[in-house]
Image (cartoon, rainbow, N blue to C red):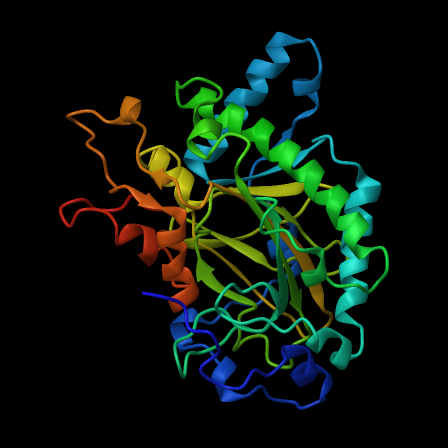
Length: 367
């Protein structure tokens, strides 16, 4: 099965819809009643429930007790939530701010300048406005830009926006720092599984990993109670490092115990979540978790999702050290290329993709 080379219907830019001033949204963005969000309130954002916040600063020092404490915190977060935030992670705050700003400038360029980079479902690389190629699908209220950073053979600066002028340089620097952070977190995840600290990294291809960036732009929505910025899904790749917007009300929600929890981003933090490939490698000790994004009528939002993925043609399967008679392998071997074709064909669909790989006799653990 191959991805089609074009979209099944004409592409409409959500930003154009938002800026048209129409008081209602087109039917194709109206979610079914059971999928519609509950608006975020101030009491939600001020509540005590949030994903774990972990200070990584101790990992860069000589205090072994501090390192052990951090490793335990990450382990608990991966097992209990599948999501956590990290601060003092080694990426310069100024670089994080600049990365957000250059992309905000891009999305506010004239449409004809952005249209030069219009994408197709073949690779998704470039300027897009939908995920999945099912004709007649209910769409999400967002535009985005997707680009490759690794492997080097896929990185093509000509496919990155030329404006604003500093964008390519900023994103090069930003992506290099995120690869370092991702590699450090992979060691912690591997050790917490009782494997060698390089096990997960080697399973991903060592230095020959995949890494890509999707910049999500959520324009103002006149009917935010009917739409979603991004439908419920788990991330198909290895690990995601998300830089959230610091300008407007939070929009990310994580499913925990069958309830949607509003994530409250900390200043200059990265929101980290486990992807389906690490769930497979860990034989579901670590679990990817459903999450979604809400929109609002008061302001636009922008976020940068950096995906730290396995080399696309390597077979990914449960680590043999984590397979026992009592807990057999829950997933068959599959390359990331094969797996992500599900996503590119169907679009966001909860956890149905990874769950569909499990034997019929095995029930999925609750998120």
